[in-house]
Length: 399
Image (cartoon, rainbow, N blue to C red):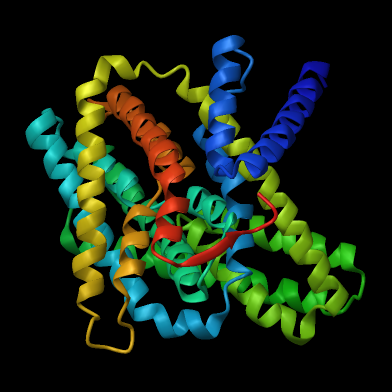
């Protein structure tokens, strides 16, 4: 293997370590520091950053991040919040995508299919960005559960909707029944595959007390669920989410040893930290190559519309539960709104746009601009907002 690859990996690890230490001292979001570092490296030494591709994000980097977040989510409180979460990730995402799509069509002059695809990919919050941000603050348990779970479920919904619209853009047949069936098949199929992959592998893990074997089996579950689901045209994200929930709530109760549980959690904590570092450095490097100046008006419009769509996705939907046991405090609503960060998922979907979409090149650049705004502006102000609302006492020790 070319030694430059090893030098590149070593350089990224060293840079990530320095950024982590600096962000810890300056009390800045780690994701912001990494994107800024990647941007600086790309400007100083053009061409040194590896390309950020849809395959790299979607098939290599995303599954372990979704899995690591899912194994930390307790099923009992998640089940209690499920009606609210399902409303946010179905009706909420639909409203947000609709606002963005209509605005880009009527005010930017984009085709309906291009505006619709952009609306979907930018409407859902990205778990990579959200989870990376929330690692730095100690927030109230319910708020943490709502923000993290909604971002994970949003991820799956966005990927499913994007796949359906991409099929239409590619010349696929369009019918209400066909679209409805595809939504059910990809969503429920992904969840079923995730459970189907996780259960037998967890049973195998229960036959050993070797924590290294248990860690390896957990890795097979994370990637296996995602790849099998994608192979059969189902949602790999929902499959990995389901597999992680099964692992975290059933696999750790009786099947996997106590020592193995600690080993699995520490392993995935490190993997998530490593992948977060790689993703945000690569985003920074890619941002440096984006000719945002040529589409500045469309980019500014997209930022405004994405914020308006997010507000419509959160406040009215959550308000509908005001007289129920799932009522959400106003402080939580503000964090759900402003914490709707966009990141790697939006870029992966933008890079996967069908060639038939007329505005494909523009959409990719505008998506990068919205992600940059999300990471720098929303990312830098999330901490002060949470503290001002009295929802946290102090940041965690680790970045």
